[in-house]
Image (cartoon, rainbow, N blue to C red; front, side, top):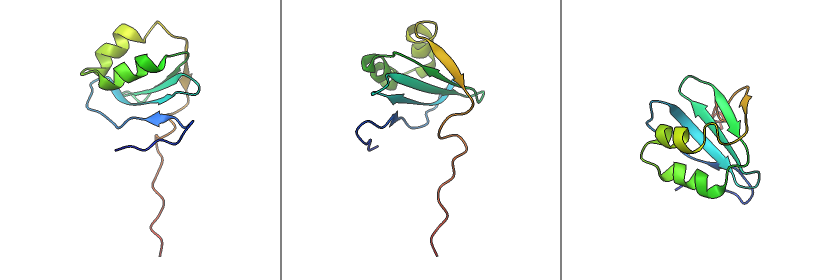
Amino acid sequence: MTRVAIGAPERFPTMPSSVIRAFSYDSAEHRLDVLFVNGRCYSYYDVPSQVAGAMRRAASKGSYFNRRIRARYPFSRMASHPDEGSQPPPPSS
């Protein structure tokens, strides 16, 4: 079970998809961050929580994204996904 702090972006686990590698939703900002399998990451703005929740539950994330999010919400390309390239802390000695 993933725990999410109040006001923190809700991070969804990496999923099997031919289009989307991972995504996260910030309910305070109504922002959906999507990391695609090609490595590009985009932020979609003004996305209602119901839309993000339906994407989380969708059997096909890519199909849902294409039908309900792409070309419907303003977006910008991010330099990289916030979690991309992050490393766990080294073990303490």
